[in-house]
Structures are given as structure tokens and as C-alpha cells.
Image 1 (cartoon, rainbow, N blue to C red):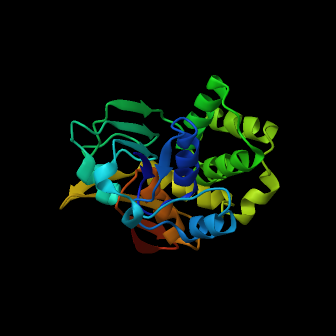
Image 2: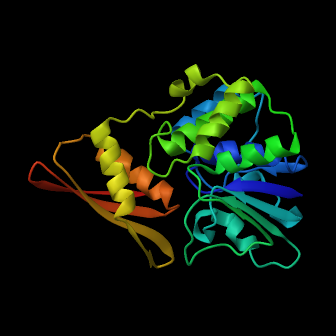
Length: 258
């Protein structure tokens, strides 16, 4: 049995890349490695007739013959599936867009691209292979790219991300409905803070957990720092993110964990 999984706390790039990868491994099942975000859970509840994603408890681990990991290559972020790593009879394939770290999985096949979203790479592969994409899949794939790139505004966004969304529009993606799934609108000051947090970040491993630290300064007061720290954690595929942001002569310290 082949299993496709992703990082704990699945977001839309995680879910979309899992669904995209399943089109490359059609005999594989989808399974979360832990909890999923609230928005992803609501989305799947409303699309239960299209995609089924199991919880780890419903997976027969003794029957797994291959593990496919998307949107992460950090062994500490795939929950119980990490126990399968290193087993000679279980090949591991990885598709990811995050920066490297000491916690990286060493898979038999590694597809790593410095893109705004893992889904972008997989959309390119599907298009290159001529694999059909339905309008519902195109909408999900566009949602995954939009969420991880902040609506194509984050500093790490590439022209390939733009092109992938454009192609999904051609395939029938309902872009007008994407904002109903995710919160992706950022003002100019908000984008500046997030870009500064990413640029000023550093990573440390603490008791096996991948911790991301950063600091930024803004002349404008911006509400909702927890969202930016959440994005920072996701950008580096970390378990924990802590950031100090100076605004209005005050320094705010915010932490997020998976």
C-alpha cells in the first residue's frame, strides 16, 4: 500500500500538493500525519464526495510499501510516519519547496524546487505529463498556491507560481471562490513585516524540534502578528516560530507552534 502524507497542521498547499501527487501515484491513499488546519477541515467537509483523507489511526502501517511526502522534508513534522524512514523495504519520495535543514528526510526520490508553493511544482509536472486536471482540482491547486504565496504577494513568490495559477484558470479554476477558503489579503505594511521576518530569520533545533526565530521593525502598527508568525513557521516548515516585532516604540513577542 502506498501512502501520501504531508506535514502536521495541514494547510491548503499541503492538501493541494497531496491531491496533485495522488494523480502521479493513483493507487496511493491520502493520510494526514496529524491535525489539519480548521479551514482545510471545513473545505474537506464540504467536498467529502471528491476527496478522502484518512487519519493516521485508520492507516495499516504494517501494509505500507511506499511513503510519498509532500510540502515538507522535515522528519519531525510527519508524525507517526517518521517511524517508516530508513526502512529498506519502504522507499520514500519527497516533493517540497522549503529551504534545507539538518532535519531533512533522505528519500530515494527528491523533487525540491525553490518556489512559493509545492503545488506549483506539481502542477507543472501534471501539465508536462498531460495528466487531466478537473475544474475542482484546478480550484484546489490555485487555492494552495494562493495561500502559501499570500495571494501571489509574498517575497518568495516566483513567476512560475503566477504561471501555474494562470494555467489553473485555463483549466477551469474558480478564482473568485478562493477567498472563501482562505484569508490571503495583506496590506503593504503587513507584507513588509512578513518579508522582513523571513529575511531576518534563523533556525535552531531544540530537543528535536525545528524552531524558527526572527525579528522585524515597522513604523506602522499592524494588528494580527500571530498570523505572520504562523506564516513564518510554515515558510521554513518549522515546529515552532518566535518573532519579536518593534512597532510604536514597543516590542511585541509572538510565538506559534504546530
